[in-house]
Amino acid sequence: MRTTQFPLNTVKETPADAEIASHQLMIRAGLIRKLAAGLYTWLPLGLRVMRKVEKITREEMEKTGALEVLMPGLQPAELWQETGRWEQYGPELARLKDRHERDFCLGPTHEEIITDLARNEIKSYKQLPITYYQIQSKFRDEIRPRFGVMRSREFIMKDAYSFHLDQESLQETYDAMYQAYTNIFNHLGLKFRAVIADSGSIGGAVSHEFHVLADSGEDAIAFSTDSEYAANVEQAEALQPTSPRSIPSKELEKIPTPGQKSISEVSESLGIAPQEILKTLAYVQKVKTPQNEDKEAFWLLYLRGDHELNEIKTRKILGEFRPATDEEIEQHLKCRAGYIGPPSKELLKKSEPFNWIADRSAIHMVDFVCGANESGFHLKGCNWEKDFLEIPISKLPKGHVADIRKIVEGDPSPDGKGQITLARGIEVGHIFQLGTKYSESMKAGVINEGGKNQIMIMGCYGIGISRVVAAAIEQNHDDKGIIWSANLAPFQVALCPMNMHKSERLKAASEKLYQDLLAAGIDVLFDDRKVRAGFMFSDMELIGIPHCIVVGDRGLDSGTVEYKARTAEANEEIPFADVIDFLKEKLA
Ligand code: ATP
Ligand code: MG
Image (tube, rainbow, N blue to C red; front, side, top):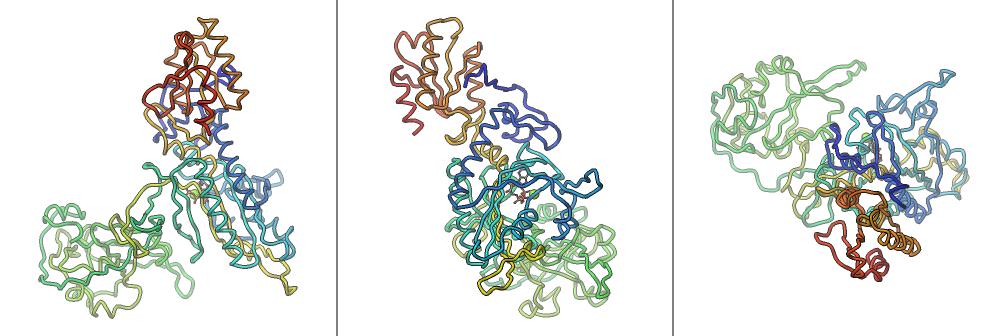
């Protein structure tokens, strides 16, 4: 390709709404252009990269035996009503009506459509297992589209769905997909980790997310220092402390703490560490009465001062809940937020029982500081059994002590091997054992060996193809621009002649070299624009071409060209006659 025929749409200015490097670089390097919030056009250069991601993905899908299909983006509401997701999905689902006033949506994912296909096409157990996949546009009306194509409203996904007679067969395909994903991200040259993911509302189901590691990633991942354990932070279990609880040695004392409401304010003024302070959070849970009426219940959640509530874990226990308002706190505890703590035995005698959960680390605390349930005061030297509980900790009914916090660096790994370290990641893939969630509600069954109808078991497997491009840039760039891995680069080699338009000799030599490179099967971008050498180099660095060959009049005299790898500090001189062999070796 020549830059006179394949225009580079590079721009100098960093767009004001681009917060992270990949978004800035995708605009500056001319890979994408914004149409509206969360909607982007892929320019030729960007599309070349995305096609490479698609190609590698397709090859690995084919290796697993998955069959490519193409399903419509526009989907009838009836199928979504069958699974109940028409109601459940919420405003992220882009809904519309056709000219006959019939309801449709733009597909955010295709479980309903593929399950409909499967129930019509698959009749016998003999056709199983089977996996279908497609690479196609998805639509999600994200509440906060941002970071360019990283979180957009229309994006390209590879989605695959598998159908099975039994769990064993599902596990086999799941493992094959896990391996295919590992191969894909390895081929793409990305540093990534597969992590145990939250199985959402379908408790117990197996799920892994694939994360590209990058400091600006939206997700936090927990790893073990000593084992293969890796999980989404939301999912990683914080274990029960193993050390025995210390013997309490202090007496309760009320201390004035005017104006000190937060853990950090209290810890600073008392000169104690946050882990010596008990954090009390007030929440309101939505519950149904036996008569099926909506009611609200007030809850106190206890955490060690340096820990944070994990809402996903807590939601698994409480269902829907929200923080209590200041008024609700006043009403239940007769004090201002910031001074609340576990109700004292005296308070308990005068009031209704409180709902409460203590995190495993919180119940382990002794001689701690906490709010006094009196505005402007805290308590010092507190101990659970002496000051707050009517029964010993060991006799507490089940449910009062639970894992409700986020795991932190240095915690023991949940698999018992090593400690937890944290890193940030960008979710680029997600594999999931669905079970019969869709096949059951849509009655997707086959005739089994015994001649009876049997509901199929399903798995689903997604890769955010367009997000992968952004994630690759997020992980691999420098102050000059993008650094592509060999398999992602839009072109392998840039051919940059210096001031070719002033030298017929150089022009002829460059043209010949270009033709020779093409003939050798090298994917080369020939910069034949009439621009200054410095401008040319900075464009090639910005768009991230891995290998650059510079030819000039002086080099022609000495029979050499200059070679520079995108990530190398200095240029290398190589004989003109060796260029092709030299590059072939680099690209091998
Ligand atoms: P996220 O938590 O980032 O919203 P998700 O869990 O909703 O992702 P899935 O439904 O598992 O995502 O979709 C499969 C893949 O599609 C994700 O792993 C991700 O790579 C990609 N993806 C999801 N939402 C978007 C989006 N708005 N823009 C670009 N890619 C996306
Ligand atoms: Mg999402």
